Length: 113
Length: 114
Image (cartoon, rainbow over all chains, first blue to last red):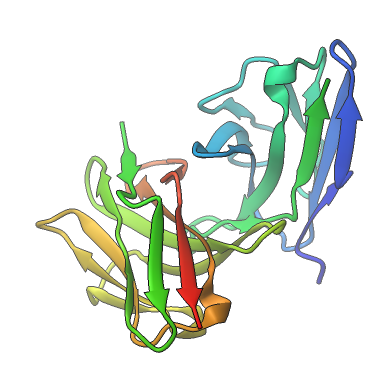
């Protein structure tokens, strides 16, 4: 049982380049989430998918798109990377009621130069 | 809108002493409250949650948290700190009605000295 996996672990992009962050969970969870973590800012929700086939914006969606490919996989795409998107990105999943806790992946450290 | 405040950026405690990491929240309706821990270069790990029932909740690694509705607080506690408890701790809240996402606090760094 791998839990939540993310690829890649590290990535360096130049301004304007695009990339997709991949996330997969093997816990049969309904909901999946993408967060970014910046020093002193805590975790901020970018996008989430409450269930397969749905996606919604979180607190900081600008510059990002997501795809819920199936129940297991939820990807985050940066179409034109900017230095402000330098951050650590975490994917998480949760089963839903009555257990609302989220389980996190190991993160992707992204640097945009 | 829901929010979480962790008033201390850092808490220092000596090994063997009790520790408290503070959290207050604001949410419509009944709160669902969570604590997570993050070790360096790792993802967040779930520690404990309050959904309903007893105000004192016990979780992983000997941690517990006390829900206080009148003070809108959910402080994390441990009777005897270990050096290995040194990490970043996050409090999070969500509302109990409908579908709601988690809102995290900014985190409190716990440093336990030998």
